[in-house]
Amino acid sequence: MVWFTELVYTSVVLVSVAYAAAVPATFPKETRATSNTTKPKVILDNDWSPAGFIPYLQALSAGWDVLALTSNTGNTWNRQVALHALATLEIGNLSCIPVYLGSDYPLLNTPSLFQAWEDVHGVLPWQGAFKPENLSAEALGSDPTSGNPRRISRAAFTEGYPNTTADTSMSAAGLMTDMVRKHPGEVSIYAAGALTNVALAVRLDPDFASLAKESVVMGGYIDVNLLEVTGSVLQADISSDTNLMIDPEAAKIALTVAFPSITVAGNVANQVMSTQDFLDEIFEVKNPYTELIHKYYGTEFPFWDETAAALMIDPSLALNATSFYIDVDTSYASPSYGNIHAYQEALMPRAQQLRAVNYVTEIDSAGSKRMIK
Image 1: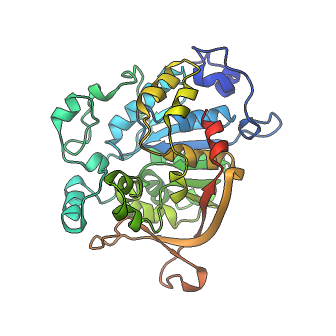
Image 2: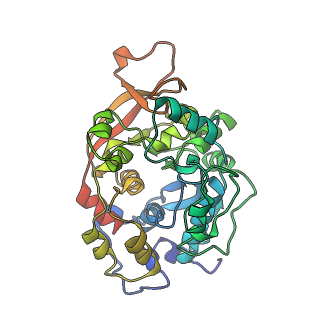
């Protein structure tokens, strides 16, 4: 893709680069890049899906330098996730952005352990990659769950199966450590899935976190248990901390290490809902990206990953935030396994090295939706 010039790469029309040249070449102020500053750099780590590409489009349209996408096991297995990332990049002629494979498995968790924990402590409404294997569902278009983590279900690629492949020269964790050393203090680590790759990078290079610019995490709900029991199963799903619960041990490492800044988009990620009117508004411009969003994003769930990306790109969208210390419950015997607990400094545990995070509690929903659009 050497012909894919820097101008096209950073243009606001990249969301329809080969399909809708009539898109206006202006963007709201908060998403325009300034030409006289160094472009912000980011590695986007996520469990990518057919309609999960908006976060990297948000970064690109804001003029950010997307160094790479990395995959992790979350909604489905890592290998399937990487192929979704490759496929959605290909749709927009963005295969110049490399994709690196993360870890197939969490640090300790496995489908059998996860399901045994559920037998004792209750079933999660969304089990992601650890849902029991169902080959019939895969044949009908579901992503693979349990079983062999390297199994690929082609029927799930509603966006089309990719013609490109992941960069296997190094792992996702290796890529992260290399990039922060190449660009010290400049690279944001966006983590909107399980935190396995971030934790592995921390263990691979003890200076990794301190050399990054920041970490932005989607997940980390607080005080949502009442919502889980007084609403529908869907409400319980929306309030479940699956990203952290897939790999609690990795979450503890990633959320207690010395990043210069950690922003947590937990409860706030539920505030910007997808609606049919908004999806219809997006689809007023016709291109393969807007078609995928209109057809497959749905209206049941909030813009989780997109909210975290918006807060990373434009922190002024945070209307309310607070700072406190957090820990992740890594006791397998606990019903809160994989959930966070918050502390004020005077009451934090003495035997642990916890750190303060920036916990956003309210976002400018209209501004976030403008960025998504």
